[in-house]
Length: 339
Image (cartoon, rainbow, N blue to C red):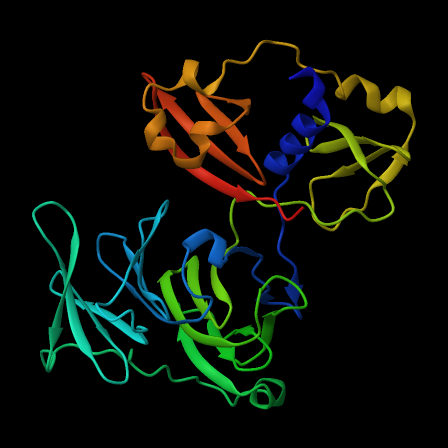
């Protein structure tokens, strides 16, 4: 791990830094969002998606031009229709998944071997609804949103989510104040929103003409922003609530409050908090007996202890926080690095 010391320190910063949300006026909190984008390379199907259905057991089903996508939180699977037709609508009722397109209706159920099987239908039970209940917005849509051609609405009871055909996703409060605007210009991979699914109060899914997005609100662990005038990060450390960093431009510090800027400090002040931990770290196979349950993290080449039997595993541009008990790892948090 000696050769990866800068990356180690960077990950420690990403793990340690807590993002404090801004406020609008005196009372409206702007939610910090973490966006995980899924592309055709991730789910191995068409780029165009039409809708979602989330089952009580946590399975996510997606209506896709290539068929029915299923996601268990770790692995994507594509189920094709007999004639390779597209799926433009999906819902679930009584342990059965229902799909449709312009000419076909069908149901999907798991057989005794756990394989999802398709059966064509002439009609669906009257209780089955492909269109979710209408969301009533207690405000007049701002002109900016109206001009973007609204296409999908959802709410988690506090925030309102409005997808559009030209400008991505808007997040508002109950007064119609725009708190966040996600689009191609910042975190989304497409501006055409087809469907929004609320998983819970802290997470939604967005179906796009080009991919899928999983959006989490105010996650407990987030990423630092882009480099500003501080240069390229080389090392970091904490002194209580003070964060010290070393970059190619020198040494800086700031408090963990989000409104505090980095200020230059001299090497003598910063160096005591930038000591390198040289303790040996076990690898994945030494830590876990159930490596097959770790998903992509079973191949992680970098392991970082976080204390209390917690370890960060890093592979590619992702990191997962796992708790280890008797060799069994449980995923607690997953991060995607933007570069």
